[in-house]
Length: 226
Image 1 (cartoon, rainbow, N blue to C red):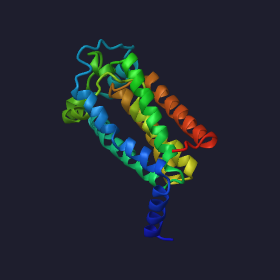
Image 2: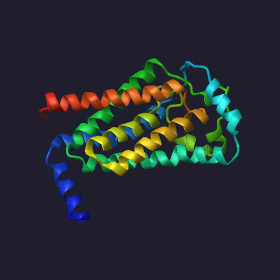
Image 3: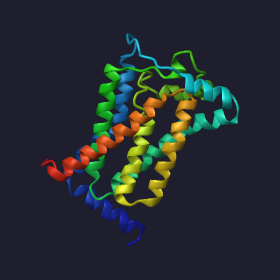
Image 4: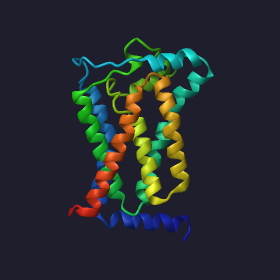
């Protein structure tokens, strides 16, 4: 069929179901909503929860906080995440039922937002217990982090593992390998940088699984008559 033919087929498939358009546009506006939360100053009066930062402190003492590893981890955390998000758009667009995956993302981010409201968790790097490596090395990156106390669950891990689940379902082998590898690497990095606790990793994976299963169930049983 060729590359152009594949794009045309995916484009026509995307337009053939208005649910694809509705949910696809919805996830497009999510980053703007997160930034709006940040500019509204919702965290000014929040007293966040904290957990033991012992694992982060151990890793920082073992690896160091200002060497090559610190630089690589800081830039990986920020820039590779952009590839992760872009890759999700690619997978959704070329999938058989784009709206199902878009719905899974919406469900995951909605639950994540609700958890944040009732359980704002300060990452180790924001408690003073661990070195804020990423901010020290790449301080401009923190301008893009709208919510500072939303450690649980890890959005980085949640989105990456959703990419793995989508790729596996669509049999996109290269994407599947990328997202699985990134989930493992990012799990190490977010703890080392003090961005998350270990429980945040498991929370992100669990939320990704539940959202994916819920969206798949809705498709199989109801198919949303929109």
